[in-house]
Image (tube, rainbow, N blue to C red; front, side):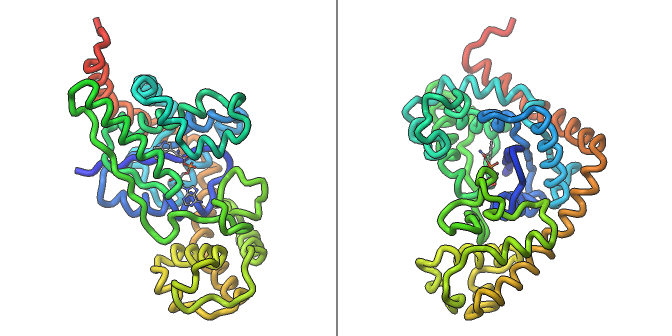
Length: 332
Ligand code: TYM
């Protein structure tokens, strides 16, 4: 039986990369598998978060997930800090993972940059918390965008070392699930940079809260190259902006890249951008409207998260009991 776990940080805006790279796939998976979806507020504080804003963006994210089609009754949907097992298991994993492993994490290197001495210890240890998120539920599959692949490999290394060190097959080795045509959505301003919440330019991303006019404007202003769209996928080589916009178009319409090219290949960018904007507005408009409705009912959203937290805690309890027993903690 597959058990799915995935997480998303409640820091800043939910954007099209999060939606196409992760959430859209979660919506599809929920019909087939037992799914646990988590808003990872403890990950968010590895860099400074204003407390009031963190609470607000956590609610906003929950609203976004429900609006996108994740059913809170069918799945376990909650924010991480409600369930102590995440922090408890992360500590055990801090003592399993090696400094050298964490030193190799590209996301840490990118985020810390030249400022290594001054970033939080949490930012460095972050992958151990992520491993704990997944393994506290013995999840077997983790749907993520491509940028999380290395963290998943580390999770497998941690699980493997724990099992070997203690001579017990406690944890499964979870598999990443990376699929769709938008596993890596790029910035609208630079086809070689990831679309991200932390990009200072709001024109680099489409936020799930953008209205139709803003979406159309951002797409109109998106960087392109001078040639029309290619007529074959090979023609996308060396054209990162064309590849990105076409990938987004395909994902929004649930088409393969080949189908998308059959549809719009050869068009000049100006014409294609009109079609892309229509597809984005058609997909995001209803989600946006539902988010607005849920935003006006915070008590309802909080109630759902509370229920999700209780369900998650109950699932993690036997795993933590087993881990503490295996590690040798006295529980008098
Ligand atoms: P986060 O919050 O940065 O992103 C959430 C999800 O969105 C995907 N994503 C993208 N996909 C395609 N193109 C993009 N430009 C793009 N930007 C983001 C991410 O791959 C991710 O799937 N460390 C994780 C959160 C996390 C987690 C976990 C995930 C914590 N614990 C356990 C899975 C399992 C993160 O920072 O994602």
